[in-house]
Every structure is written in structure tokens, then in C-alpha cells.
Image 1 (cartoon, rainbow, N blue to C red):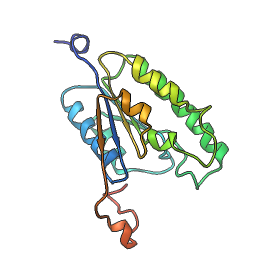
Image 2 (cartoon, rainbow, N blue to C red; image 1 turned 120 degrees about the vertical axis):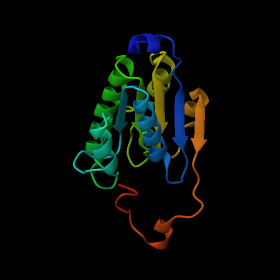
Image 3 (cartoon, rainbow, N blue to C red; image 1 turned 180 degrees about the horizontal axis):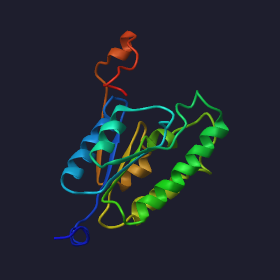
Image 4 (cartoon, rainbow, N blue to C red; image 1 turned 30 degrees about the vertical axis):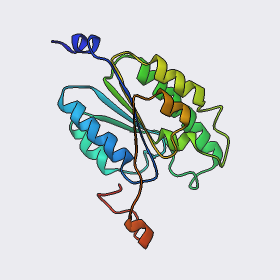
Length: 185
């Protein structure tokens, strides 16, 4: 059975990984590896991470044929609101195009919930919540769409087929340990 036959017979799902605990991106990356192992074409679009940095997941995933693109400019406090707004607008344009073009079996919109939750500057005109909902509703029927990040909006949760909330119980960060190479990046 070819990939187009497989796609025609498959129902795609929308998955949301959210919550304040560590592991949302990690869960989506595990799903990406599993899907690629089954021959699915996987694209990961990272809304906050900057291409100016190197991330462990990108190194390995690119080696095994999973495309990862960092579309952000980093944390909201590291750049100006204008830089973030421009990056978010470009990221959203790319996300819509790539999700709808039919090339992919799985598209992961990593940290999109974080982006939608930005309050330090306006984002509704460059990353409209209603357009995210419309993308979920109109995505190709075969496509699995995964959205990660803290603070998933209730409107997105309502449209999702699966929602996992990851809650922290204990984290070394609370003891003053910074991000750990190989575990956080």
C-alpha cells in the first residue's frame, strides 16, 4: 500500500500536550520518532526556539529524516516585541502552509500554546486564535496535528481529540539547577 493509499484510509487526529510540567515537547518528539518509524513524513515547527541556537533534538531528528525548524527568536524577554511579533507572524504563515499542503503525515506545532499565551505585547493580529481553530478544523483528513505548550486555550482543548496535561511534582530547577544539557536542550 503506497503512502497516498495509506493517507486516504487514515483519519488524522489533533493532539494537545499542555500543563506546567516538563515533558510536553519531549512527548511530541517521542510521537514523531514513532511515526517516522512507521514511514510517516513528520514536520516539527518550533514557535519560540531560535535557529541561532542548537538543540539536541534537532541534531538527532534531522539524522533520521524528521524535519525540525526553529521559527522563533527565543524567550520573550530576550528580544523586542517587534522582533517576536514578526517571528510569530512568519511562523504562523509557515505553519498554515505546511499543515495544509498535504505533504506531511504529522505536523507538530511546538510551543504554540506558549506563543498564544504571550501577554507582554499584542499577538492576536499575527497569531489569531480563531485561525488556529480553523486550521484544526480544516487540516487534511489524514494529518495528525500536535500542539504543545503551557496554557492551552479552552477553545483548542475543545477541538482536540486527545489532551494530556503534564503537571510538575518535583523539579531540580526549583533547587536552583539551570537547564541541563541533554535533558532540556
